[in-house]
Length: 417
Image 1: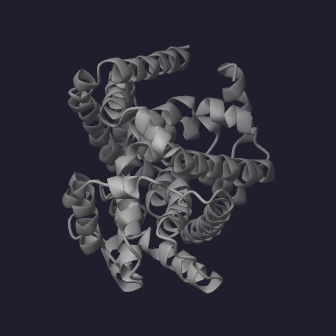
Image 2: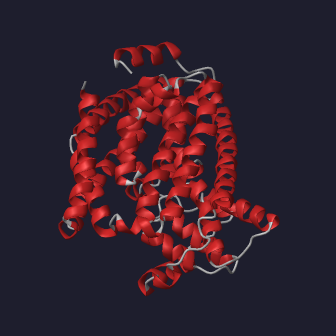
C-alpha cells in the first residue's frame, strides 16, 4: 500500500512539475537546489548500503569459489547486451536519419561549443590497463566520497574474503553489518518520503530551463532515441525475461517507483537503493544484487550505450559525413571501452561522444546541439539503464540456479502486482 501511495505522489509531482515549468519557467529554474538536495540525500545512502549488503551476501554465502564464476558470467552477459544495444542504436539511427536535414545548426550558441570543446579535451581515453588499475581503490574512504561504486565493490570482495578466512571470530562484524543493512533500508524508506519533492523540483527546473518548445526543433533525435529504447526493451529485455521465465509486466510494476525516480531525476543513483531493495524482495539473492547492480553502473549502461551509437550517427549525419561499414565497426569497438571509462563523470555520455568524435577528427557541432537537450534524452536512457541492470541480476541469479521463483510469486501476490 505504501508503494502505491509513493507511486501516486511521484506521478502527481511529475505532472505538477511539468505544469509549473511551463507556466512559471523563471520560478521553476530556481527549484533545482531542491532536486540536488534530494539527490545528495540518496547518494549518502548508497556507500554504506552497498558495503553492508555486498559483504553480507558474499561472506554469508559461504561459497567463495562461486564468486569468480558469477563475475565471469556477469561480464559475458554485460558485453553481449552492450553489443545488442550498440547495434540497435546504429540500426535505428540509419532508419530514422536523426541528423539529416536539421536546420538549427547555425543557431548553436558559442557557450555550448566552448563547453563541448572542453569536454573533448578533457575526455578520458582510458586504456584497458588504466581501466584495470582504476578498479582497485587507493582509499575506500575516497571511493565512498567519490561514489565510485566499482571500487567499493572490489573493496567489499576482499573484505568479505577476509571475513570468511577469519571464520567465527568475524561473526560480530557480520552481526554489525546485518544491523547496518537493516538500518540503511529503513533509512532509504525515510529518504523516499522526500522523493515527490525532488521529482517535482527536477522536472520543473528541466522544463523551465529547456522549455517544451525546444523539443519541436529536435523532435527527430528525441523520437529516434525513445523509439530505439522501446525497441531495445521489446526485443532484448523482454526476450531475456522470457528466457529466465519471469513476467515482464510484474517486473515493471515492481520497479515502478525506482523507474519513475530514474526518469524524472535522470539519475540512476536516485533509484539504486530502492531498486536493490525491490530486487531482493523479487527473489534475487542479496550477494548477486549487491555485486551485479553496482558493477552494471560501469559495464552495463544499456540505454547510454545505445544513445552513444545513435549520437555518433546524428553528429556525422548533421555535417553530411557518410560513415562506411568499417568506420562504424571501429566506432562500435571504441565505444565498448570508452563508455566504461567515465562512469560517474557528469554528462558522461556527452564526454565520451565528444572524445570519440574528436579522436576521429569529426566536427563537434552535433555534440553542442545535443548538449541543449541532454537532460530530456538522459531521462529515457537512465530509466533503461536501471531496468537493464535489474534484469541482469535476475538473469545471473537464474544462470546460477539461485533465483527464488516461490519468493517472486509470493511477493507479486502479496503486493497484488
